[in-house]
Image 1 (tube, rainbow, N blue to C red):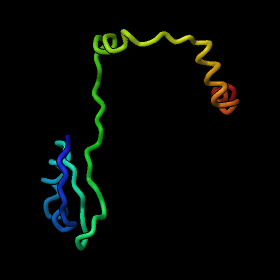
Image 2 (image 1 turned 90 degrees about the vertical axis):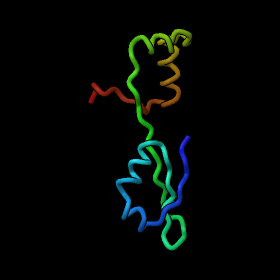
Image 3 (image 1 turned 45 degrees about the horizontal axis):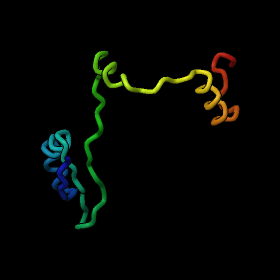
Image 4 (image 1 turned 30 degrees about the vertical axis):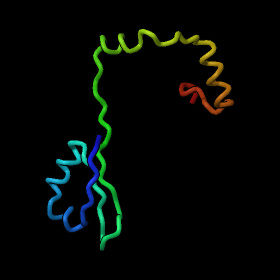
Length: 88
């Protein structure tokens, strides 16, 4: 869980490296100007690679997909909006 801090714009300018390191480690900052909040610095979600074994384990109980029904659902959802990329 991230920790929330409030910092001034001046503090951000003077300690930007230290603050960005803290954000990288999960901390969140609200940046203020003249005491009023103007922005938030939040960590970005990072995607982690999943091994083939982890994927197989995680999807072992996934439902089977009927390809014809899946295509029919897509056609219905897009109502002809999806075009053939090879037909251009």
